[in-house]
Image (cartoon, rainbow, N blue to C red; front, side, top):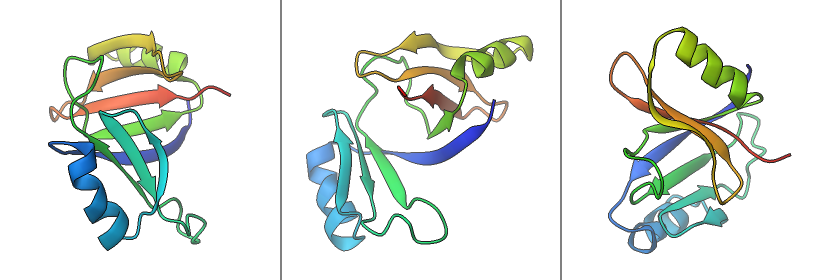
Length: 122
């Protein structure tokens, strides 16, 4: 498994109410997606030499029992799931292909943080 990118998942009361701060004030003006309960905003200058500048706003995960603090995109989510199980980590949300096309699972880190490990459709 190789990590492709890591994004913070910020808890918000509502996407629409929070959007203006992140887009207008911080300049993350590109809305990559908005599912109503999670949305990703990136800088228009995403190729800034230091990687993607982005944040995900989450008002409550639609299918998982807990919200995650970060999303980790990997090249092989099935291998990541098998490794998490082999190492005995708590699986918070089982490996699932979600209706919006992401295959993911949630795992609890030893420090208690819940991590969303995902792979996107090719």
